[in-house]
Length: 193
Ligand code: ZN
Ligand code: FE
Ligand code: FE
Image (cartoon, rainbow, N blue to C red):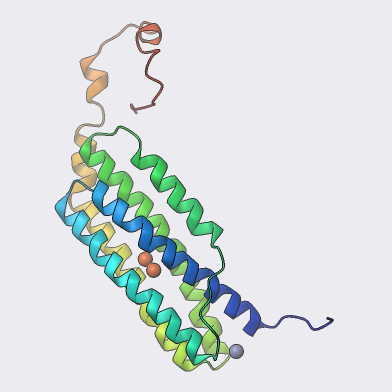
């Protein structure tokens, strides 16, 4: 088999990657919504979950427009982002800090998706796959709007609230240097600072 792959082949590969990424997100987002303390943040994640389900269907339309069967190919990138999000959710943070961390994780996912769909739209346009390009552009716009919404929530109060409590423990426990090490040896979770 001496035939070399073309941009079209790479395009279909990347579509499969995104198809799998969206499916991973439909499983991860409900957990993130449940972990949110701010009702607005929970609502934002839940509404993006609904969009994400539609994005899965939209990708199926893209495959169809190209005469391809919808098929996923494991997306390691989003898997890593989700894994890190889950690790942060297990930390014992105060509520606004936990929400700030959820936003940070979710924005990593959105930026990853924006990069992927930006490329897909550009490649589809370059190859004249206009129906696919239009569909992918719709999703790209949704990812950008989701990212913006998260920004608004972070900067509209959550970061500020989290910052209010950021240095409290330092003020409360005026421990001499070194005194904490034996006292806190049982707790291995790095909760401060
Ligand atoms: Zn093509
Ligand atoms: Fe998405
Ligand atoms: Fe998204």
